[in-house]
Amino acid sequence: MLEVAPIWQPHIQQQNYRLLLEAMSRPGSVHSIKGLNTISNSLLAVLAALLDSSVRFCDTSDLLETTDIALLQAIQTLPEEADYLLCSGIGVPDFQPRLGTLASPEQSATLLVHVETLQAGDLQLDLTGPGIKQNRNCNIQGLDPDWLVKRESWVCGFPMGVDLILLDQQQLMALPRTTRVEVH
Amino acid sequence: MNEEHFGFLDEYAKKEVRRATLKAVAIPGYQVPYSSREMPMGRGFGTGGLQLTLALIGRGETLKVIDQGSDDSVNAVNLRSFIEMTCPGIHTTIRTEQADLIQSRHRIPEKPLREDQLLVLQVPYPDALVVVEASEDRRKLLHGEADYSRLLVKLYEDIVKFSEITISHRYPTRINGHYVIDPSPIPRWDVPKLHHSPALILLGAGREKKIYAVPPYTQAEPLAFEDVPFRVEDFSDEQGQRRSCVRCGCNSSFLDEYVDSATGEQVYRCSDSDWCNQQLEQQQGVDQAVEVANG
Image (cartoon, rainbow over all chains, first blue to last red; front, side, top):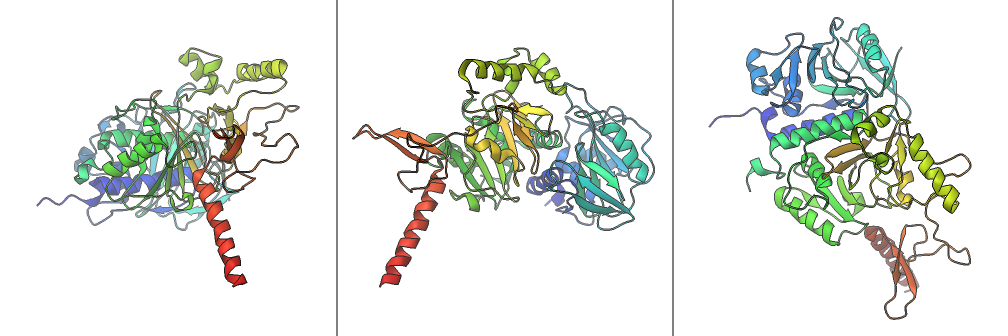
């Protein structure tokens, strides 16, 4: 019988979605992605939980295999037009993502940023904002500090902005547009 | 029922609801539009809350469904049995503290929610601005600009006419200093529970096709004026004594008013039936302990 990798199975996608919801609700909290194995990486697992044929997607840094992108069914497009973008944390983004409009801020991009690790690292952030009781510290390895400068320029006009989901090989963390980030 | 049908909705419908919830959390208080599928019950019967629950829930999780504080009323029973039927492997409970997910109509449980719990509220009318602006396009702009001056004028008119703000439920509440939401028809009593709630609160309006959220630990301020502060329901009697529940004696919960059919007297009971039961059990536990102690 054909064996379907766990990340494509509805109950694993439900669990990964709940991790995303938890991460978005509590910015800076780190969660272990479910259903990973030798053929499924963390990027694909999170995308599989979110994407289908009704959204536009762009792999800005060629992080995925073409065959895997096809499985996501999403419409491939330019970074400026995508609902979901996959980016590398190394290097500074050279595109302008969708920020939504004042009346429809949800028509904005969600950026999935691949970093080396969310466990430790030389980039130390202090987070405040909705979802965080007082403040939360987190360490990231493999995210160019200029990413945060760019992010700031995108999220400064609330309610417009972008939401970031950071991913390493096993885990995820979110920085919604409302989170205030200070670099130590 | 096979695995493909878990949760009644197809996976595309679930993913759309899921994407909408993530945006709703990222933009606190903003009403995210979604397509709102046909459910096997009339719109207006909690289909928004139901679609949220079906998109959220997974095997092994425990669900509580309440309607006006009660687990046993028609809306709650029907929704609960529908979810049980379409989501094999989930558990249901009437105990607030045992639930992972709580779907509710018109109340937030008395027992404080925890960080690991999630509250889904059923919403009939999601837009607080609908009373002052008929056009949705214009309302969306007003929301974007956080311009609630006309809503405040409406509240002010209330004060001029009645010397106080007369909104009893669906009290307009400002989330994270920007969007004003209709928090669903919860009484004023429950509005302060939105403020810095440890649990995530998701609101779903099926007929109006909107999903919005109050993230945990987020400011939620009921609209008010400096000299006319927000206040919750007052359950004092004529002598100024706090009324208590006729069943369990609790004098700190939100009370429903009934008329005793035999005597014609007004009686008060806890609106949250699980809370009331637990108060009773505690007292009975104490009574039994006293009995045991007295031999």
